[in-house]
Image: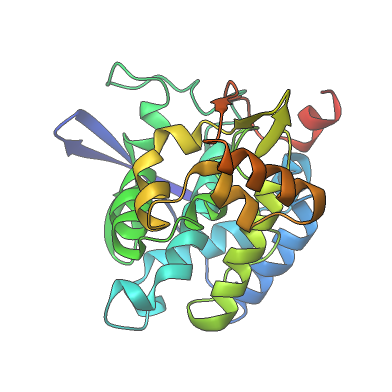
Length: 267
């Protein structure tokens, strides 16, 4: 069950979206099991399976709305929780909007594609209303300064980095290991990460949109050098060679279609 609220924001009428589902004591375990079931090995979402068994997702959305579910005193205590919240809320919004063909499809007030999905819809998170954009930029990027977070946030689109089929740890070594593994998964994915064509590295546009993050958070490394750090074998060698040559690169066209596993099979 969901409850829709009207919120007033500077951009116009901001829509509020929350879940009023009951929260069982096993909410995290139930949702973790659901992720293992509906996220494919290559990081797409089986939305048919998710919609047929969405109870654990609805309960998790209600869970993250309660401040009591966020122990700790600072953003450092909530790094993994905000990653999990972003990914869960993306899937939740997809279902609430009757599975649009693209996250850019819902029309918003702002003259920008995707504004309704990312900017103009707010969710109850830790007792405050936050959009996906606010979670990504204000609660993750600007606090953590970790380029690996770009591999961990999934915006429900085909060109997004692969969605992880488990919850991220809250913090510490377990979270760091997951983020490193997630970067490896992303960088070895030629459709969503980086590929090499005619001695040119072809990157996901995320590397262009957040070029400042990748340069600053890596202490000045070029994209080829960053990708090589999360690659192995001949692929790593080729990226290192390209880096030594000034990293000739371009960006592929981002595919905003819904990251539905059934779409992936047709491509």
